[in-house]
Image 1 (tube, rainbow, N blue to C red):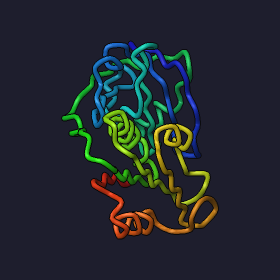
Image 2 (cartoon, rainbow, N blue to C red):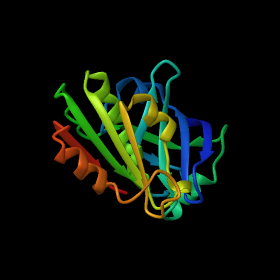
Image 3 (cartoon, rainbow, N blue to C red):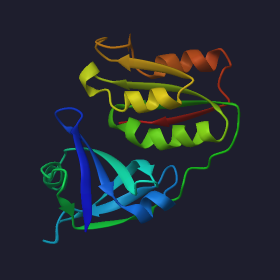
Image 4 (cartoon, one colour):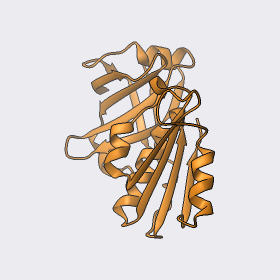
Length: 189
């Protein structure tokens, strides 16, 4: 079983958890995910992106939206509780290389899987422009973490409550029109 080290409520429907999983933290690469089973009562197993990992502390961070029974059961757990089964890291890692300037675009909950990809491109020596958005300011997630790795961070909200009032496609179009992007990575909600 894997212990929940921290739990944060990011919005009414979005939860962030840090789990003790040293083997996964050590091995995970950008773009990989885990399969989690909340308890041993034959609950479904669900895939969740590894939003961050800290091999030194043996922890991984997951961010999920409450959309069904399994994510609701997971959201009801607290720091100090355990999840029954955790399998990972799984999936083909994202291909990362030094290309120059990478524009990373994420909307809503899609910012969670975008974080390790943006981080990996930055660590590979690229300039990283991050464009992230949500419907409202309250739904913006991982802003502080993205600020740490972005050379430039552009935030958009549909209602204009934070950052620019537009969809993420508008600043993406502007960056591409200026010729400032060698590669664009997009992940939606």
